[in-house]
Length: 294
Ligand code: KPL
Image (cartoon, rainbow, N blue to C red; front, side):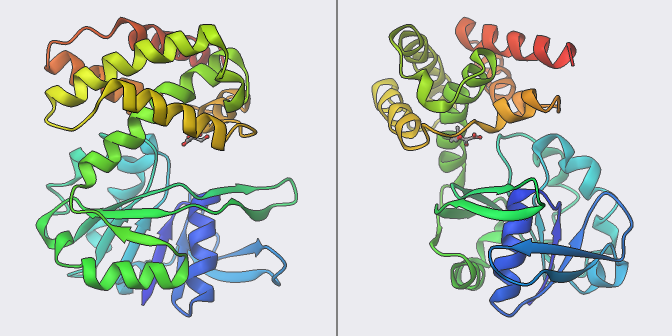
């Protein structure tokens, strides 16, 4: 397949290398205009990718949009006119709400979303490290996307397994959003690793967050039990105890965070459903204050 990856952060680069190794023709699209980008992955010799070429975009069968939620619209809008008929657009990022404004403009294309638990980072020698073996769940954001499940899932699974299909991607995205609402802002506020949230005062707060989140999810027609969500958040805290969350890393590096698409999205839906969410509201404001101080 001809695949173009938009965004050369850790996850975009990881997919680029695995898809290249699986034999696909992979090109990259970044914020600059360099005609080629070299990526160093694991013990392999650096891989040279064609980059920022309109011809690659014109020929792409699949475009993977792997930029942060707040960059999605700005990054994709100029590219849409260059996509060929039938080109599939697959989004992958933390949070929700970033793709909604683009769906009408992508109505002629199959549109998918992939949520992944793989851990990846670009180390201080610019090498891509696959730090945690995870899994990827893919689902459709429109009807054309749903028709592609039997093609896309085996192709991605062959490159970086396991990849599965979920008919109810909204539930999967909300489940991930709920966990991110519980962990990410708190680690950024307390400047700590995920594992350090397993302390009694923080646990009481996470319990209160779970009650609010579960009310909003239920009102939105999704399944969410607050005790089960709390238990899941504890599992993730344990499984990723040594990690710094993505929001913690963004604050430490003085980058914009994804708070508007994580807790911010929850608050938007809570407002629409007329549900009070004071605990999540407070965390949102604390992160916005930190961003303003940068
Ligand atoms: O998804 C994550 C993130 O950091 O964004 C968690 C699950 C919290 C792992 O760190």
